[in-house]
Amino acid sequence: MENEKLLIEGAKAFGIYFDKKIAEAFELYLKELLKWNQKMNLTAIRTEKGIVLKHFLDSLSVFPYLSNISSLLDIGSGAGFPGIPLKIVKPSLEMTLVDSVRKKVDFQRHIIRILGLKGIEAIHGRVQDKEIRQAMGDRFDMVISRAFSDLQTFLIFSFPLLKKGGIVLAMKGGMDREEIRLLPNREEARYRLQKIIPLILPFSSFKRSILLFKKR
Image (cartoon, rainbow, N blue to C red; front, side, top):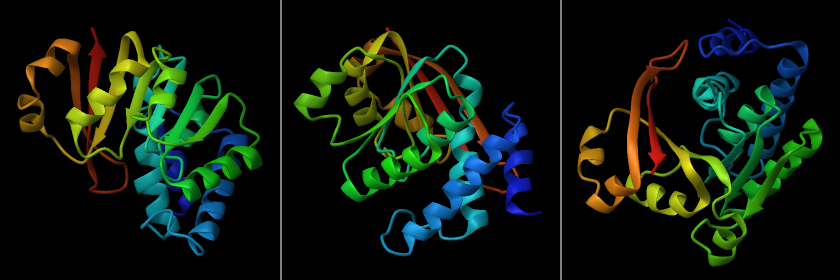
């Protein structure tokens, strides 16, 4: 199955139906990522099919949990995942991307520009930096990441950036109930674990877990 069909059919599993404009945006994103990746290491995945399955569809897997979300912060967004794919399929999202690696932010800004995306910004920095926390405090309906390996640290950094009742969505590689069980009492008091959703990405054996925490 060619890559565009993989993406279009795979997205249907998450309730996303592509029109021509969306399909063309992902095609351009894919070509630019492959081109930039020849010059600088943006992603270890270097095949078209791998990018479609493990970046694009992985990013889109959280779409069903965005129905009541207007503003979203993507921490450690790398080459734009999951934030830019989500913005492409849900243009109304106010999207902010933050990454500490300058070349990755430069690539994000390039993709935002050539796709003509509005209501999205890419920021170079770390969310633990005082100036970023002050500028973005209590601003977001959701904070998301698939780059943090340490759930506790992700929850701590997200807390001051979320509105009351806001959602932290952690994209993990597999079920990690032990990591949740070992969270200190302080984090349990700050958040309520809403859901753990295990899934296998379409057309692959790639296992993921989506963890949703609500700020108290």
